[in-house]
Image: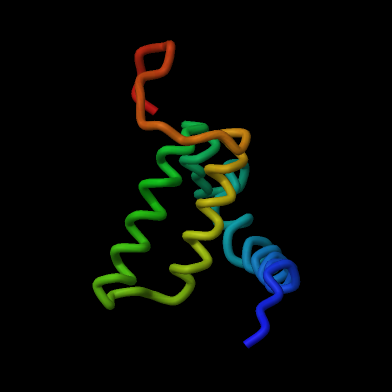
Length: 99
């Protein structure tokens, strides 16, 4: 079986772009009525990691729901973006708040 990781990533990226536009932007937009985006408020990549773990365990326990894999991928991107691609650590920030 021949695997082209770059082409697979391009297909996945296009799929995720459509998923994010259709399933997340309006739902989590702070400026819309009822919208709430914990990631924008906390700016903590570790929260994204916790969500990845939550959805991973749900799938591991055969209790996965539609779009859990997409949610994990989206949280991975957000953690990467918030951390500028650096290692994410669960430690106390300069302001004394755990990240």
